[in-house]
Length: 221
Image (cartoon, rainbow, N blue to C red; front, side, top):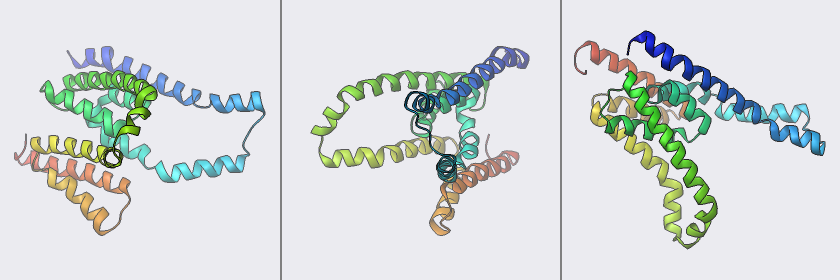
């Protein structure tokens, strides 16, 4: 497939559908507020609304920039739209995209990798939807019979285990870059108490910079 065909057959349709669905999701998220206003006459005052928005922006605003930049290399364009629409990015969409590319042995950053990664994310969305629906009916019944130590492990160690597995997967491919990514995070958080978003940016762009240097020197492919 030529670059022109890729642009016309993949990039433009993906961008159109992705932007449309995300904007619709943003608009529809206000429907509960519209219902409360017109059906119940409930409307929070402007000061309270701005204060609540400020709290959310202060806590998560940085991730509006950090996450798209740090995840795009694995998710690709279509995967980014899909992931930010459906959620569970770091603990589900990202690992599924990476694993799909790993299994089919496609090279990261290529057109093939983007298509394969998107299919992996799509499969995770369908599986997640079925799993959540099933869990809504029988999940609590299962949790109630599990020992407390198992419940505690699920709640506290599932996400770190997933992150560790993804880090290990890419560390095996690029062992020269693994110490850079994790080292910068340890230094910034452990010694300087930096916020997580600063650590993520430093790890991502620091790894990119070191990777470019090693690539120019012929140390890595």
